[in-house]
Length: 169
Image (tube, rainbow, N blue to C red; front, side, top):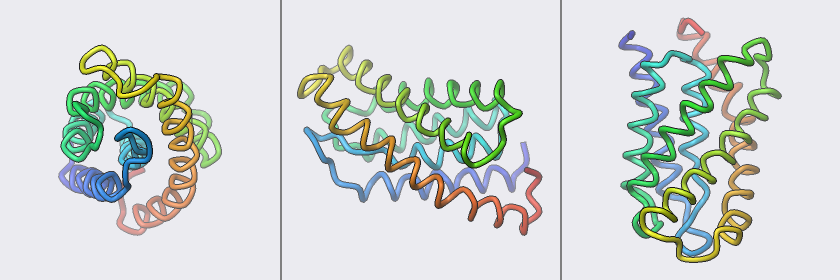
């Protein structure tokens, strides 16, 4: 593990934390999770199990600390861990499609996985403040759209900066 890669991943976690903290809850304490976008970006740039493990745990803990969902700390950790490794698996096995369009589709799939895992684990651990379908359609589906838009904007910027800084991508 290279220190400069860890620093960049920590920067992604920090940016994701700020984005996650400033977005208000939109329905019964749930809000779109923009820290996912940064986590996905880190996994795409550094597709290594060790980095994915650190990134998912850090993102999960910090998302759990900044959540507005009642009792959402543990579901956030579970969600980020499962989602991160599912996303890593998708990126690893479909490695021949390395372009912004396929990564945007992967981001949409990852956000759907995240929302499903979060709501399911929250349901089992603390219960949901509303119906699963209502929470899924009012928060998870808009989050898919927002995360894909954010990814399409951020990905080219980060890859250009990483190339200029001589990161091995």
